[in-house]
Length: 488
Ligand code: MN
Ligand code: MN
Image (cartoon, rainbow, N blue to C red; front, side, top):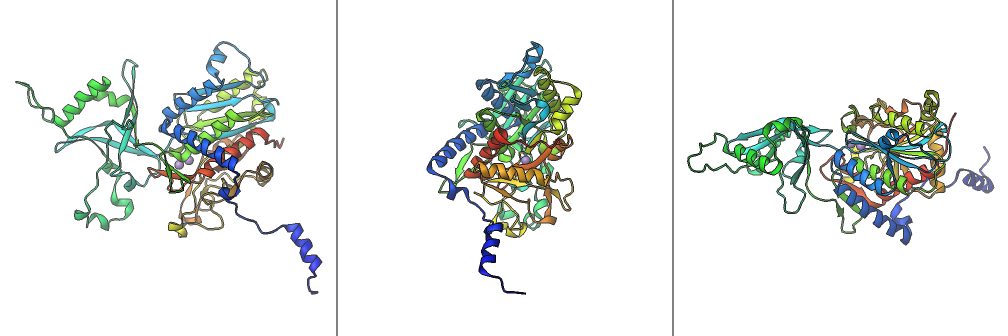
């Protein structure tokens, strides 16, 4: 073989470019972009503080979009109104699921650009018969929701959010533990001095699901005059308070949805304030990015949709989960109001759509380096994360995104100077993850998982990098404004 000549090498270099570089948003941002990022992340933290549960989040979103000129789909349908290019519309379902839509210039039949995320987060739910007293301590029994490491939830200040719906239909909204003067609740742990046996257990056995009961009080009701002494006086006192404060009886727990979440607000993290530490960033970080992108997107060629779904953490089932027909029904109603509906046109619209399944990704954690494959993992500060596959082991349960779709997305994001990284969740045989991506992929549309990298995912307090939070929104906005790939 002849020796390579200098001209040949430089021609090859030009052809193949230099080696791929991992970008870091902090190094790339201009002062102007840094300022905008700080402004955006402040708004995001405010959003988190008012959206700890799916119900609160749906409420916050409706208030926000109504101010921005979105109208309620149900009212439009009832009043037989029409929708035209530029119109903005929203629909909600059971106070927990939301869909937002801006009508684009092209017919819906040519496809929509959709960003779909979820607004439920792992937590502890109060059981239907929760209240009991044991040796002078009143407890609320819980049943955890979503994938949690149970030992992380003990000895923390916790808050209770939710609703109690009484037989007459009157709903009491409950929020205990968030106001600075509110009491908090908690789950106890054994003192280290007596933990020799406990500490020999495996972490997965330290706390069973039944061990996560909330300490709710320990002050007995004191009898007055000739009142009879209550057998469970602490529970009796709690019931008296519930009646006084919320006009509720013990049986009203039967028709309640009360969620126990970490108490307190989102905080900046790190001396350099580079990160955000907060409950429920999976997946409100992507939800807020999608909402903000849709609200601020310029004129849209394609009809743009944001779906905010419930029940993702437990498999997307139920009337408000991604598998519910609510989302499809709402889009069919919207298409109908634009005057172009037929069953066939609707199928074409869905198949010609592009979806960003907007959910968080894992991030490399140097403290657990062995759990990741370092070439194929997201890094804090590396920008918007794409997961071509999720699933587990041999990609089981994955939506495997199409290369043609990914190529077109890379082209757009480079043009719009959005920083992104391609990653897998972690070392192949360690576990895995699922999202809503495969559900909408059933309509035959383009789908890819794409969101923000999160450290401590599913822990009571999750951590994100501020630049990644901002870059997620910039990516979604570029997608809604400019992405146009229709295979049909
Ligand atoms: Mn998620
Ligand atoms: Mn999750």
